[in-house]
Length: 411
Ligand code: HGY
Ligand code: MN
Ligand code: MN
Image (tube, rainbow, N blue to C red; front, side, top):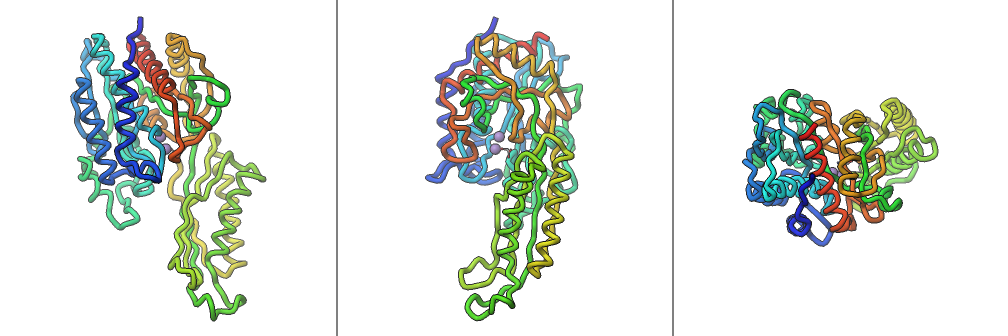
């Protein structure tokens, strides 16, 4: 028999978090910013009010724990993230965190004590906007930090080692954030779909079958800065036309050539970025995504071939640096079934689908069985201020998360 979440309290808290770090361009709770810290402080307060004992681990993850009736059992973990992309939406990550806290709060109100301890985890820098190292907190829990994480430097020159203490972390003790498989029973995450499938199909719940792989590249194009008015066209070594052709090539590789599922150029830094100066340098951010790692590898080959051709044709130097390669992760059949059964308990229709977005679950899956519940994104929009999920769908997701926790605790 289940316990009902408090839908009004859930949506009130979600609305309140949505006001922290919002401006007229959207949500600005970029990891490590003072706005991110304000959001972390708010959810820490909610965790305490829900009866969780709260600590910060060496990666800055916020971890709330509620005891179970059998302390010898491993913990069931619920989690997500509160950091946002720049000018992002108010549901990405936030819904999973607020719902996880609401689930614990509703069980305490019932009152219902589970056999397993329950931990709510709010992961540091899921988006990777800061330091270009995504899933930073969840990868620390899974023991998946790489040399590039320890050596990470932000665009403003700050090192990760210097910034982690701002959120209570300590990179020299990151090993202490790592959790062993025998400490954890499983991981459950509620998240908005961030795509159109559920909303278009009229499904209130999505059972996630797998989480996409992602490869990220930094492309540095160096030409020769010069005067826009006096330099003849034939004598230019202009970095901008090369950058533009890289953007078109990325669209061609994923679009017409269908080498991989999607490809995006989301960032471009022009130097010196003045209208009357021929750009001497342009830095381009590229990412590819696909469930098949061999498709990502093929996309990289095509990207590097194109860059070499362009360097010659445009008389510029082009350096392609692979920044990070995150493997795709399948969700185990029994964990998918857990979510489907939890949706059934709530009398909610559900459909299975893969995640085109990355999630902390794909890191945590390295250390314990993971499952994800999706709820509809209106119009499939996300990573934008228009991101929206109805209060009813948010409550449905939280109820399915609670049901999944009860089923996991019983199994
Ligand atoms: O980029 C992603 O897929 C996720 O939102 N971090
Ligand atoms: Mn996101
Ligand atoms: Mn997210």
